[in-house]
Length: 365
Image 1 (spheres, rainbow, N blue to C red):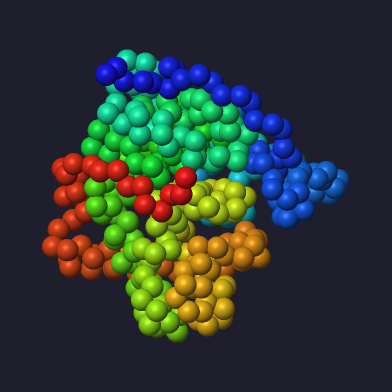
Image 2 (cartoon, rainbow, N blue to C red):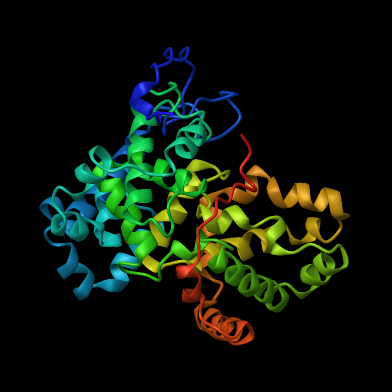
C-alpha cells in the first residue's frame, strides 16, 4: 500500500477563535493566570522592556554579527542577562546563536530542503499520528494538517532521515514545536540537530535512543542529588517507593516544554541553551525544595499527583529560577556521571549502535 504523507491529507477547518494569552495559547479561564490575556503595559514597564531590548541588540549586533566576540569578552554579562530572560522579540535569533545552529545552517545550504522533499522516512505515519498531540491549545498548531502541523511534520521527518539511528520519538515533537514558535522550519531543524548532536553542550540524542540511556543516567544523578540536598524528602520518596522515573521523565525529555507553564518553560530554555542540562536538575531540585513541606506529608497516590501537578505559585519564574540558580550541581553531576558509567561497565555511547524503538510512555493524547 502506498504511504501517505501529510500533503495527502485534507486541511481541517480553522478552529473557532478563543481568547489567547500573549504566547498564542488558548485560555480556558481568562482570569486564571497572571500570564493570561495580554494586558496593556504601563509606561514604565514598556520603557524598561525597550531598554532591555536595546541592550540585547547592541550585544548581538546586526543579525548576530557581534555575538561571538561579546560572549568572549563579557561571558558573565551574557550569563546574567540570559538568566534574566531573553527578550521575546529576539529569542529565536539568540537561541540560534547560543546553540551553534546558525553555523550549522550556513555550512549546510540546501540540505534541509533535500531531506524534506526528496527523502522518505520510516517514521512518517508515526509523526502524522502524533502531531495533533503537540501543543494542541496553541493557535499555530490547532488546525488539522494546517501550516503549523505541516511545519512540525517537515522538521520531524527531516530529522528522522538525517539521523536514522535516532529517527523519531514522540518527545521530540514538543522540542521541535517549541522551536517552530520562534523560528523558521529550516532554523528549527538545525537547532534540533545542534541539540541532539551536541554542537555546544553534551549531545541530547541519548534521550531518544532505544532504552533511553541518557534518561536513565539523569534519573540516577537526580535521585542522588535529591538524597543529598533534600534527605528528608528522599527518605519519604523511598518509603513510598517513588523514584524519578515516575515524575521527572518529561522534565528531561522535553526540558519542561511538555506540561509546564509556557512562560516558565521559555525562561528555562534560555538558560538550558546557554548553560546546558544542569539547569534541568537545578529547576527540578528547586521545585521539590519549594514544595518540600507539603510533599513529605503525602501518601503515594497524592504524592504522584502532586509531583505531576505543581501549584501555580511554585512555578513563578521570578521565585523559582533564583532558587534554582543558587543550587550548585555541576561538579557533583560529573562525579555521578562517572559513577553511573562505572556501574554500568560502559559509556552511554554503546547505545548508538542499537536499533531505535519508539518511546511513547508519559505523553497523553
